Image 1 (cartoon, rainbow over the protein chains, first blue to last red):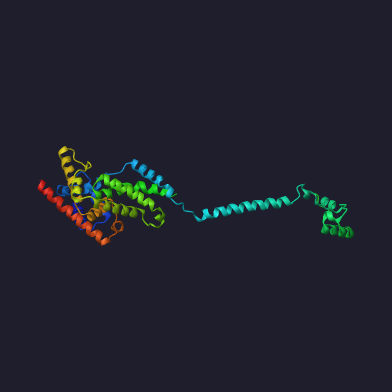
Image 2 (cartoon, rainbow over the protein chains, first blue to last red; image 1 turned 90 degrees about the horizontal axis):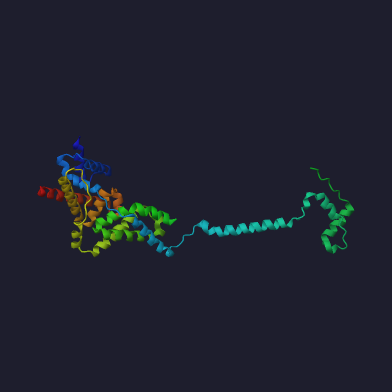
Length: 158
Length: 172
């Protein structure tokens, strides 16, 4: 076993020129069983370094976490940008739904577009007593149609 | 979400903080108090956690400062008396009880010598030889220059070596 290397490391150790890796080597060397006699005096030094066992128990963790829980009311919630915009998104979604429903509600509920040809014809055959019922614009349209005799295109049969 | 990262930094660091606090206060009860105070202080600063580069260095620095504050309230004589009352861990490779006893004595001696060093030297020794920190990290934790770190480690090691070998010689 080459102790020259260890002795060199020791010298450098006391000159504070060793790296962490080299110190690790020294430590593991001295934790072995067969340390040569002339090096035994250093053993306690390095042995001590590896022998530290003081530690805090797990109940320490619980105590700390408890103490933190108690101080929670003081904790301020940090709002992220996304969180701040969230109410806006929700509002936009609601408005979108309302608009969609509103649009859908404007279309005739009796499924008039199954046969537009019929609907169209019905519309023009309406006997109206007065233009007031239909409104002036629609009454005009009727008049025009009857004079020009609009040709209703054949609806393709599916 | 902050809670999670506190959990991740409580468990790994508490023993490291405890060892450092113990190295400075030399009393287990005080050391535990210091670690507790450190945790609470770190928790109260959680708004700044994002700005901290190294949580470990930050916690260790807070711990060290709190430990120093605590020791300033203690008298010097109290410290040296407390030091000798610690139980040394049983490190023994030798089979026979005599060797074990000798080894125990040696360890206690080393501890005493280290505990009698000035605080700066004790701390750097703790951080370097026990916690395996680089000079750079130690400088950050203790808020001193790397050169200072090296000087303190040098003095610490030399003193320990001298005193230890001296008493070994006398003992035999």
